[in-house]
Amino acid sequence: MPRLDQPAIPAGTGSIRPEPLAATMAGRSSPRLGAPGGPTRFGACLAKLPPGSRSGQRNRHATGDGLIPTLGGEVVPLAEDGTVLRTGDLAARPAGHPAGRCPGNRSPAGAVRPVVGTRRGEDAVHHPDAGITPTRRGRHRRCTDAAGPLLHETGR
Image 1 (spheres, helix red, strand yellow):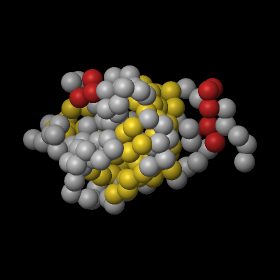
Image 2 (cartoon, rainbow, N blue to C red):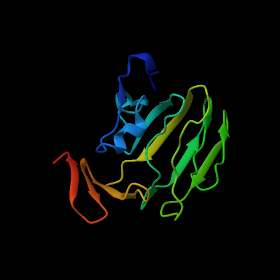
Image 3 (cartoon, rainbow, N blue to C red):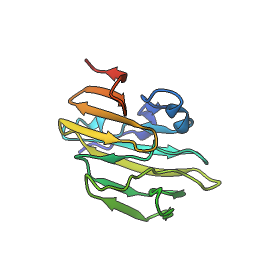
Image 4 (cartoon, rainbow, N blue to C red):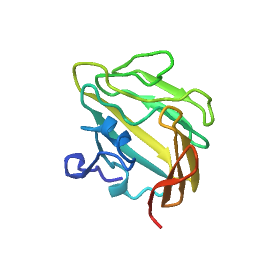
């Protein structure tokens, strides 16, 4: 298994979510770590969160379990109870859990957390605070609001 050259892996920034939701992720960068190695069943990135930023909006996945390890800094993963994860800590949650998660950095220094997820065919992610539901079927992604109208679509 060859070692990957992490500094050479381009980082994704911003969000595919519409404004004003995308603004909450300003400054976040996420190099797609798994892609250069060729895995097809999971994806991985290294989310780098500057002070005051977060990974996204509070959400819960219909089919994707959640694991939030912290490699550096402090991350607050659970909007409901304010649990703080410091370097070396982790939190986990099963798919469909009714409480949402929203990893964010409330510390004065940067935070780093890996994100690993399945590339299973489908998932729906409910964002209760934002009133949106992004869905994924293969490479096709849709984002609708609570009333059903399409907000954003990619990968058709």
